[in-house]
Image 1: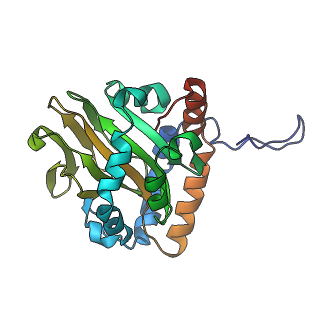
Image 2: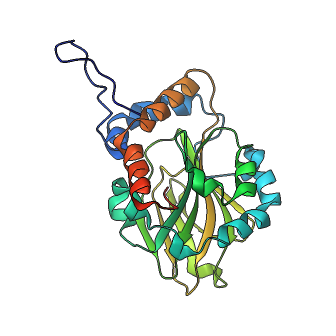
Length: 257
């Protein structure tokens, strides 16, 4: 979407977030927004949450094999490295073996990608509060350094589609006040977590890992829900989202987070 503003001399100013990255916005606004969101959150402030708390998760789990079949029909080499798509991911996407097949994000859909996975998209259309959706591929030997998300307004969901035979060699390590959680994926099983807690990912195996990765709105009420909506709409206008869109166009690609 285009910047808002007036003609020279009109006195109107550009919105301050338009030319900022998602991470710059998050760093400036996160503390106040997160406090407000958590006051109205319908889920507890935990690093890992019970998938049963979001009813739509069970539906995706029932159809996980159909989603897997569509995902693996897309060869990993057809999928761009996340670092080629999103410059804002910078350091954590330096390993080119982390690949993302972009479906939807912040109100934008990649039509040619969605057309390749019709059953997956039909299921995703039933997910309330969907913000982003992609197939995330972690190739053999890949590593994602420790990092954290920018807002508690979203939760991250993984549905494991293809997991290396050596499950222990492919895992996510999430820090939390109560201690560290080391989680290995299991095919057909879900992981729901708050990515504002530091986390790191390894695939120390000779096989690739595929997950359906979604970011969804944290269930909230009242003012927290309104603030959450305003923040996410603002993000859709930022350089973070627009750069991904433009890079995907330039690559004529099939990917992106």
